[in-house]
Image (tube, rainbow, N blue to C red; front, side, top):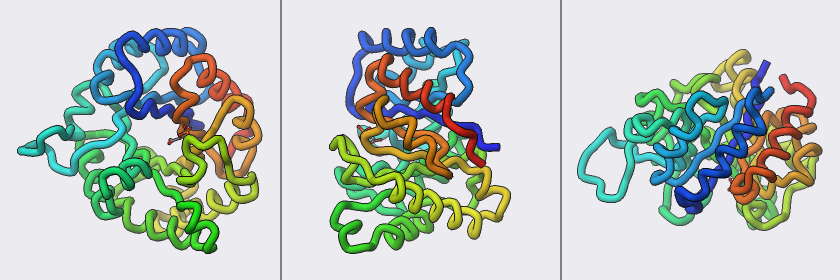
Length: 253
Ligand code: PGA
C-alpha cells in the first residue's frame, strides 16, 4: 500500500514572515491521512523545520550538490540539508535542468549524495511541449528515469514526480488520460528495473498547475500517488484544500 504524499515546492519564494503559513497548515492537518512535505528555499529550511517540529509536516530541500563538502561557492550539500532538518530533497526539477544545465547524470550523482545523507529523493521527470507535440514524451521520460535514478534507491528513498514542463506555472494541465498514460509507463519502468515489489511500492507524484479545483480528478487517476505543488503550496488555504482532496482520493496500489 503506497502512502500518499502531498509535496509543496516554494521555489525561490518565502521569507521568515511566511512561516505563518506553516503554522496554519500544521494546525489544519494535525493528524493527516497522507504524508505532507514542504520544500522551502534553503534559507528557510531550519526555521521551517523548527516550526514543524512535533507536527506531521516534513521539510525538504529543492536541490543539493553531488559532493559531500568542498570548494563549491553558493552550493549546499545533502548533509547540510539534513543538518538543517530536511528529510527529503527535490532533484532534477525542470527549472534546475533549464536554469543550471543539469543533465540526467548530474541528477543521478546528486541522488547518490542525498541517499548517503539519509534523504529521500523526489526525482523530477517531464517533457517539453515540443517533445509532446513530436510524440516523444515516453522516450524522453524513459531516458530521464534511466539516467537520473541510481540503482541503489528503494521505495522508501525514492519518489518520482512527473512534471510536464509546459504545465508548470502555466495553469495548463494534461488530460487525465495523458497523466494516466505517463504514470502507468513510469510504474512499468520502475517495476522492470527495480523488481515488481519495489516498483509497485514507489510513489509517483503528478506536478504542474495542481490547484484545489483540479486536485480531486487528478488524484483519482490510477498510479497518481499525490502531487508536487508549486504556486498553490505557498498559501496554506490552497495547499490545505489539495491535502484534503488527496486524503479523500481512492487508495492507489
Ligand atoms: P506549479 O509548479 O504547481 O506552480 O505549476 C509545479 C512544480 O514546478 O513543482
